[in-house]
Length: 373
Image (tube, rainbow, N blue to C red; front, side, top):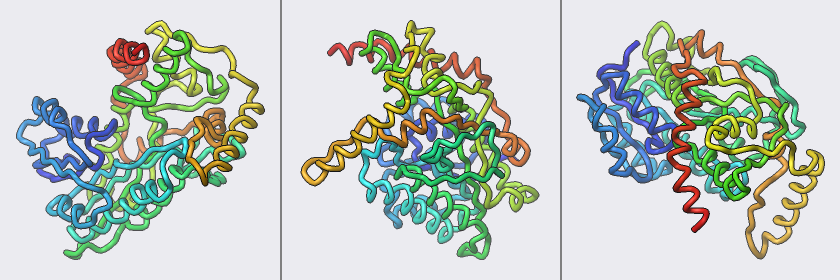
């Protein structure tokens, strides 16, 4: 069902996914207003969106996701909230209080603002990392929403996203101030890649320092299924359309959905090579050290940093949970999202790869100059 005439809020609107979703909403829907919520909204972003804005009003709301009054003001008169904003951290570089405040408390305050301001639809952007992998590295291959898995999460990021997700699902069917009901839905994308992905830029920079040879951090058999950012945006749009449809609203409300696409299953390291090989990058054939030794080294780094933490806080570049994540087969199907939400990937693997490689090519000279300088 189209979102014509609706007013929506996009948190994290200037980020990697948020920016892409705003652009898609402008291209696909004739909405009355899109509110861009972020800590800071760059004027350049608004200028790039002007060409596809049409009659849709773009409003800027700069503030802190932990400010309840600010969130109420942002949500007033809106009907849909896409909650994308969060702190992403896989090396434990952010203090727990900070990541909990943004990822969990911020989500709770936003849900409360929706209830107080009569917002009827709430789509939360979660992550595959709320599933794991667990510290034992138990694999999942082409998993579904019904799979039973012992998560035993260790990352602060994973744990806070999981709690925020649970709060979102629990808020489904809450009574709004005007007597209506809030409908919530959670999307769990795989590792998201595409134009603007800072993780890909980081790997490219490491490869440049290593003589244009990408580091191998994951075994070739540790297959995962990354998802293109444009397809994740499409899934968000389809979720919003489904929540607006009275016949689908109750069926999908209060549920979560995995979001993947037709990107071929591949290890994280081999995926980096797949999008960077056209730029002249090679990749190491084997892990720098055997996997068991990799764990031992990560453990020793963790212990050393813990011992000196009372005097100085140093974040190790690698930890055991990250080694596990990079070396565990962990892939999921999008079939339930296709059935329930009508989600179908808009971009093929070939097109997604081409777009990503072209963007990396545009960044390559700047990265080389930055590293040489």
